[in-house]
Amino acid sequence: MQKILIDCDPGHDDAAAILYGAAHLDLVGITTVYGNQTVEKTTANALSLMTLLGLDVPVAQGCAGPLNGTVSHGGDVHGKTGIDGADLPAPDRGVEPLHAVDFIIEMASRHRGELVLCPIGPFTNVGLALRKEP
Image (cartoon, rainbow, N blue to C red; front, side):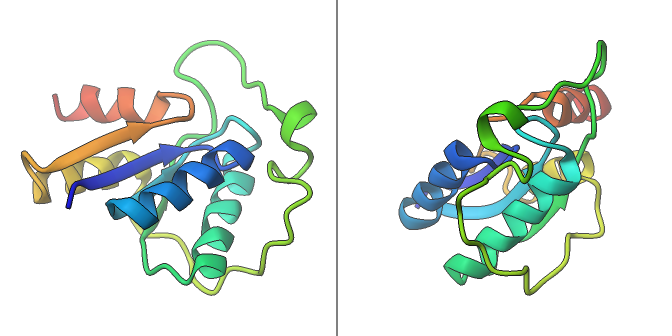
């Protein structure tokens, strides 16, 4: 089964991608980034989704803003939580101790030649991971 790591900013759209990845692929981790909301809120959404789905998948929090430019959020689309309208449970776990950039590097090394990185939010974590470990 294909191993996948999803780098995302969990709003409604990313929740669907996580559901698909968990159901059809070997989801080895989720990394979060700012985008649909602040990174703190997107990380809380990812953790709540893991609880809701009963998944034991590590979540690592990443970048709070872009490498250049200003931060903008999709709150006008996804609401103040980044996933308004969803009745999510409180997370039953915390985040991984590694920053998302280091987590991406760790998973790519651990699953060398097997892992597909699926970035579906801003590419800041991916850009920094490539910069740090080309």
